[in-house]
Length: 310
Image (cartoon, rainbow, N blue to C red; front, top):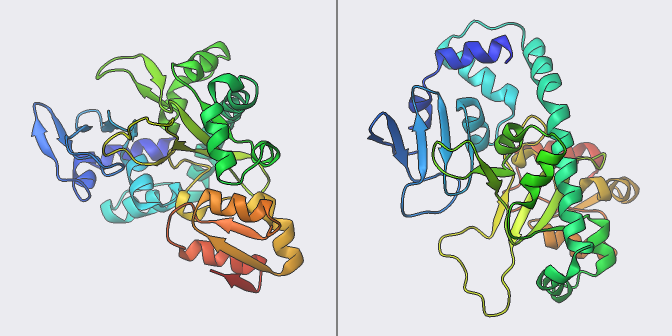
């Protein structure tokens, strides 16, 4: 672990920071509360003060205080470090050194795992189509044909723990997959892992160069299947060194040449709003992925185009 990260974690009490966003109750040596990342009525969100870690057994999010603040605030790694450094007067080395150390240590294996997961889910949808017919029907009903689905590398997370098994066979670091939000712990205190996404449509989120930085999942019910209570329709992988949701625009990799050509960009809210418009010929379109248009979104788009159409 980078020396600056170790220093920050030694100065900051995770309970103090988490309690600013979650009402915590002490249970034994740990704390519990309602998860801030998904809707629930029974607390499944746990914080260990002694270990400096949090984990939600409902949605699978977990990590240290830096990861928590990144996810809850939508800030970058550097922004969180700078915030904690200032708040707790933490002596750190130059920010460029700890950013580069964090990047070199974490980005490559995370990108490898995301690529493995993307290809795994893609094959599930298009190779083993007998188990994903309800996904293809949903896409067809939304006006999204197979060619478009392939173009956007959509995928299917089936039942079981196929992703976990595949990552193991490729000798991937499962802790990285866990922190990324691809896997969950089976039980409290258990070292075993299981797939986080089950029976879901998978939507890869790419950077502007077309490399995957995150995955979104959408629950797709078969006809007559009851909807799970208090379960979010969409679940994303976690914010990371390469992905901050509030700073990312879905579809920018595909829309970029058309934005430059037209000198204008259409901004929509949802993944399928963007995919549908793109496939119908309005290719200078991006999506905010269900979040409000942020200051960073506007700054980034203003550098690409003179006209932003909401």
